[in-house]
Structure formats: C-alpha cells, structure tokens
Image 1 (tube, rainbow, N blue to C red):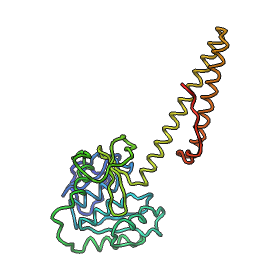
Image 2: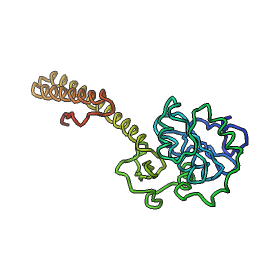
Image 3: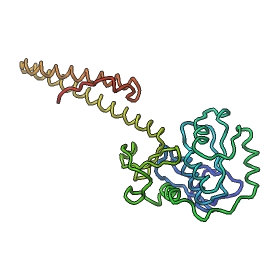
Length: 281
C-alpha cells in the first residue's frame, strides 16, 4: 500500500513510498518526506536504510536487488554499522548487476543468494532472535537521517562530514563536502543533496550538456541578429557595416557548429581535443 505520513509500521504489511517522497522509518511509525534528492532520486534507497538503521538497529535486514550504479551501498553500510543484517542478490543472477556488485564491494554483506532463494532466507531471518539494539547509532548516520527527514540543515562550518569538495552541487550549486565510507566516496551539499562519485559524474555530464545547448542557442541567436543588422545596413547602403555584420554572422554560425559537434560526442566527451572559437562580442 502507498504509505501516508505518520502511518504505523505494521507487521506483515508492505509499505510503498509515494511518488516524489522519501519513505523513512521513525520508531513504530513511518515518515513520508520531500527531503533532498539522493543520487538524483526521491524516493531513494539510502535514506530509507539509514532511517531504519537509526530507529531499529539490530532488527533491520537491508536487501539490495538488481539495479544500476551504486545506490544502496551507503545505506547498507549504515545498516551494518547499527547492528543489522545485509542481504544482497547474487550479481550473476541480476538483470542489472551494478547495485548488488557495489554493495558487495562496499558493505560487509551477510548473505548473497539468487533471487529465488531470498524469500525463504528472509522468512528465516525475520523469525530468528536478534541481539539487543545498540545504545545509539553513530553520529554521522543520525545526522544524515535527520537531513533526509528535513529535520536538520547541514552547514559546512557546523557539521564536518569531510573535506570541502572542489565541485559544486549539480542540483543547487551549493558547497559540497566529501564523505568517505571505506572505499565509497560520496558528496553532500549544505542543502542536503547527496551523490556518489559515479552519479555525480552523470549529473555533471548532464549539466555540461545543458551548458553546451545554452551556448549553441546564444550563438545561433547572435547569428540571426547579425544577419538582420546586415540587412538593415544594406538598406542604408552602408557596405562596410554590412560586410562587418555578415562576417560576425559567419563567425557565430561556425561557433554554433563546433558546439554542435561537442554535443554529438556525448556530454562533452573529447571536448579537450577541440578548440571552440566563439565570435567576438
């Protein structure tokens, strides 16, 4: 069922996040919050895992199934650090092996099974006794869970997750800090957006493409304006001005063509080998 804010966490019921909302665990009930996107997703798996780890400690079983990139790796680490269990689908059995493969790299996984064997395993684990819960979850996990729930705004001068990143947040252009979790490196900005390096690369690539299209549009508009000005100069029999505006129009047309080549290569790949000549203003 689609979960509502404050709904009780019920035994034997599957709770599903509504569109564009994080599903979070808070003790014996659930939160549905429009918190900052993580890895460009909302709902996202890592905020759910973190909130469950903080609230339920050793009673949590985190499961990572087929999927792309490395979503879930950070959350599964949080589950393990808070005393829970980590279960991962065998990457060889997954249609998209990235997520389970990365979970095995970055988290201390307890069980790896094909999809067909997960249900019996989970039923057995759920019925087995668990150790007493931890007294308190690690501070950095609790802080990130509060950020996901929109109950805390992180500021670089107050919450030191790690060194400041040289890259700005692709979603809001805010300052980012690097978070190192074993071999897993993530970035979180002061408004809360979070990215693994792999997802950050994709997001920056999309930003690069948007920049290229904006530059190409500006070049084309300048070309059209210069041609219009050349026509006006011709009507006034100003041959020198007409030739100057025609030259500028050709320069802008050439610049737009070079940018179009960069776009065709895909998110600026290979841009370093091409010099883009932009027309003088």
